[in-house]
Structures are given as C-alpha cells and as structure tokens.
Length: 215
Image 1 (cartoon, rainbow, N blue to C red):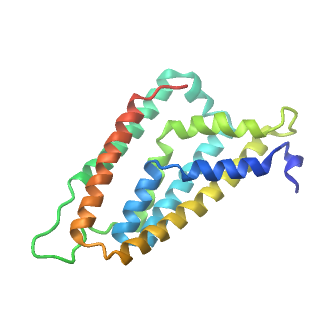
Image 2 (image 1 turned 90 degrees about the vertical axis):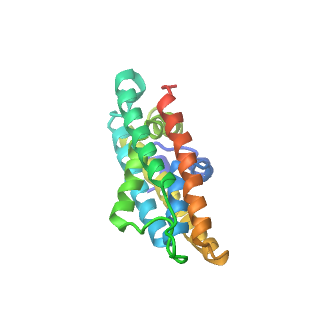
Image 3 (image 1 turned 180 degrees about the horizontal axis):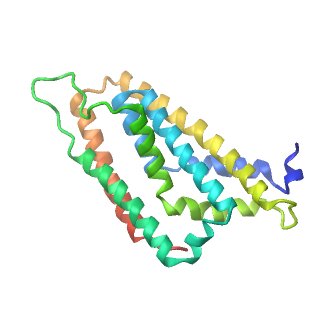
C-alpha cells in the first residue's frame, strides 16, 4: 500500500532524515560500541535489539497520545527523566569500576554479561529517556497530512520505518566495532580504558538528561 494512502508525505525525506538522526552519537550508540568492543558483535546486537524494543514502546505510546503527557506535565517528565538519568549513571558506575585482573593478561576488563541482561540494558537505556518520546512527538507528525484518515496508524507506520532504519544502523555499528576491535587486537588495558572512558561519557549524558527540560 503506498505511503500516501496512510496520509504520509515526503517519505524519502523522512527516511534520509531518520538515518542521519540515528547516526548521531548518544547513550544507545555508546552502549552498543562498548558491548561490541568488549564482548563481540552478538553482544552489541543484543543491546541493539533492546534499544529497538524500547523505541517501539515510545512509538506506540506516542501514537496513543500517552507521550503527550511528558510534553505537558512537568511532574511526569521529571519522573521519567530522573529514572532514566539514574539508570544511565548506574551503568556508568559499573563501567568506571572496571578493573583488570592481575595475572590474567587475556582476561576482559568487564566480565561477559548474558545477552538477556545486555538486551535489558539497551531497553531501559532507551525507554527511560523522555527525550526519545518528545523527539517522536516533534519529528514524526511533520510527515503526516492534516487530513490523514488515521493519524495514529500513520504515526505507527512512520515510527516502524524509523526503527527499522535505526536497527540496520545499530547492527552495522555492532559488527563494525567488533571487527575493528579484533583488527587492532584490543588488549585488556585498552578495553579497560574504553570502558572507563565510556563510563565518563555516560556520567555526562546522565547528568545532561537529569538537567534537561521539556522544550
């Protein structure tokens, strides 16, 4: 069924804009790169799938009008914002506390995590970020006609397209990061530095999120 049947316009521009927005660095990309570099592309893909699941929650919430509450209620925005910031800072603490074990030159800086836990990290990092909800509310409606027969359905269709593009980018990032790590023969000292540097960036992102305000 053609896009205009849903009341969607400028689909090509939407796809290109979505790809550019997905490429922009953020906590999702940092999580994928860290897990891929230290535990392989499958771990990065697990994080990406969690992020995709979190994005679907935002898409459905926005389509149902629930995310509008975050844009109009300061209390709701603050609650979700602080929960997301707290989780990002919790992850940052774990990365900053990474240590290399003495006498274990080949040991990874961070113990491998089960894929289900990595999936949960990706999901929570994304779903607890109210900026994602506000982004969908601000960006997606620009590509929906005012006279669309079913605006909620058009929103879901565009959101799914955005999420599919995002997943392609995230999985590609996971594979690229893992391959790059193998080629440079990432040793425990470098992996330790990577985790601590990422932890520092997560601290910055968590504080930034905590201090953010609805636009």
